[in-house]
Picture 1 (cartoon, rainbow, N blue to C red):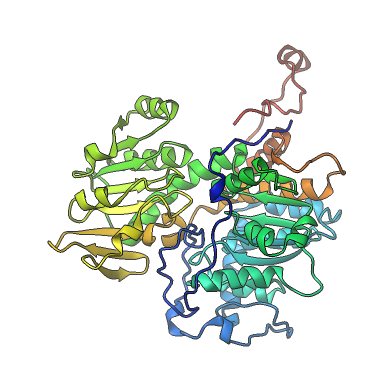
Picture 2 (picture 1 turned 135 degrees about the vertical axis):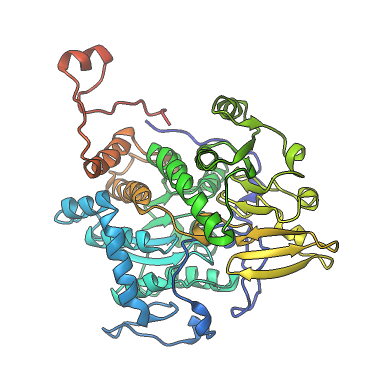
Length: 493
């Protein structure tokens, strides 16, 4: 059943971002509203400070003599391979899919261009797509997202990867263009996280865009942009909205954030949570995960919300619903996870207590108005990677994490098992769009069929030695269901 697009009013935001003229060796501390700053990524355990030469100025080749990549250091490949092997153990569904389908090669002939966080988990996905027959070229969806050793392992394995941790904004767009603009290679599938790759092809290579068979998008920001194109009648490609699939919303957004919020805060600040007053802005699935984790650690948690349904859920879960202005002077930690812009503005930042920790768990860096802190009267002091003190003239300071970008993927890592669920959903969406007969999908944005969501979930159950109960014929008839599913209607989220 096709789900028509949610209507977003402001069409003017449609792909309005442009690459800046920041030098490619400059520190990546731009205040750009583009999603080069919006995404953040898994922390890389390798220190990139030992070599300040831009990867763009290096000539590197893997052991087979292939140089169609641009990464930090190909010599880190062995370390990256070990990380990928660890991730494979926690991604059972992708490994099962690889084993079951590689004989059939359902993606034979597919030329997938991707723009996601380049981590060990993404590497397992890319190698699965390759095993299923696809050719892949990849860039990172965020300037801080790449695990350099993983990028090296992928390059050594023959993948065309263009990414390194700490890219400038100019580097970011250059890497995307290197993925797309290559002689004799026409992509026919897009796997995107945030819409920047889709935007680049749509704007720079319109003829190429028209030949794309399908787009798979996993983020709320990217889906928003696709719906804008659809509403304007400019989407000439069928697209799959993975972000709103059950397997993304109820697992990745909730459970991933429930574990990684604490990890990100601990790694950056060593803060103790017991007794701390925390305000979480937004009570969607991400906010629910954050609140549950902080409450379990003994924090006093406040919630802000605009949606009365989510607000009521917060109240019934035992959280006090407030306006941000009511608690901004007293809280120790401020966490945004709304998907909106200007949730925390300069007025709020001015009123925060000394030592308040400010961070974002939403998809975009637009939630905290970091640009308002780039003024002459305020002093920025780098404490450690992704941790800054912003100091007021009277000596008050706040602790800003990841410059307002996604905390967990900038400053820590995320649970591999949860990412297995999302990655398997992405792989199946690519297979579905690539193999769909002409006419099944029109030039619109679609949700995954519930049968596919349930299949992804079922692939992960053996990890827990979980045994599903089967309906009897009588029970199935009573409920009006097929014994084998789907068990939920298509509108269920």
